[in-house]
Image (tube, rainbow, N blue to C red):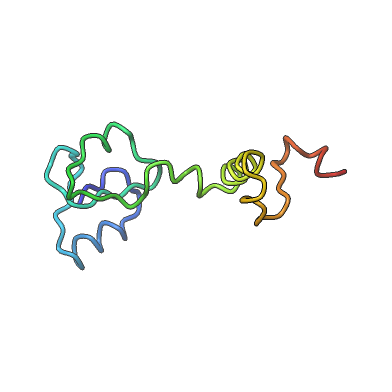
Length: 102
């Protein structure tokens, strides 16, 4: 288990004790799972083997953050209005505060 980018000891303990994974902080070692607290570097993704997995999807930040998700949904709604009519009117504050108050 590649665990160089996690601050949570629980993740390391579970990997080591419950799943019997060898922990490493060296990305060049043979590992099966990489655990990240934040975004994954594209450089690492391009070097991964087919059997290696991570705890995040590449670019998940764009969907997991409410402001990014709202921005993307509104962009898709402008492009495909009939297909993207399933979410409420959304405002990105403080940028759209004036529109929100109207």
